[in-house]
Image (cartoon, rainbow, N blue to C red; front, side, top):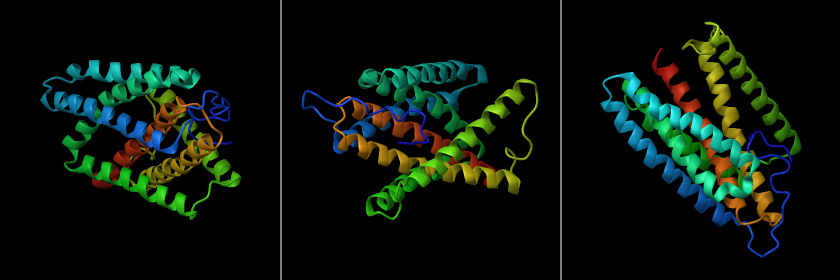
Length: 244
């Protein structure tokens, strides 16, 4: 089964529960809600610290701990999914530290932008969930292939841009507030949103296959990764539009 989310692969649900304690859709929803609460709690903490900071250096600790720690915990979660009841909530807490700083900085530049981004993120989540459950959008093999290929292409562009930034360069236009930059961000937002459909399908398949109970945490982790990506891309898109 293809999925654009790197945390959810073909082998994610290869284990089947043998003790009768199976993964459920309701359990996955509850775990996702708990992880979102963890993100909000630490994001509020780092937000307040960012607003009150007198020097940018005061924020380095939050960014370093959140970004580096979150990345390492995410890797552990991907390769040791049976540890996800511990590592997934930890990832949410660490991710919140980074999101709080980023969100506060965007809010200081463009007042009201964070509320708009949050509203659009969860509005997109709800709309796509309704469309998926009603059958308006189906995760066919061609659909999965197209979204996965587009996601890989975006990841490659970001990687090239990061490498170029190490040498003082950048990919022209796509990070600017011109029509090309806005168009690129809009495309990325659409692809990030469509990854939610693949996540819904993957979770549904895990429930149908009788995956172990701990997979609820892992599935919630994978869904959170997509939501964070979608939120950040919407922030970038709105900032480009507001910056024109």
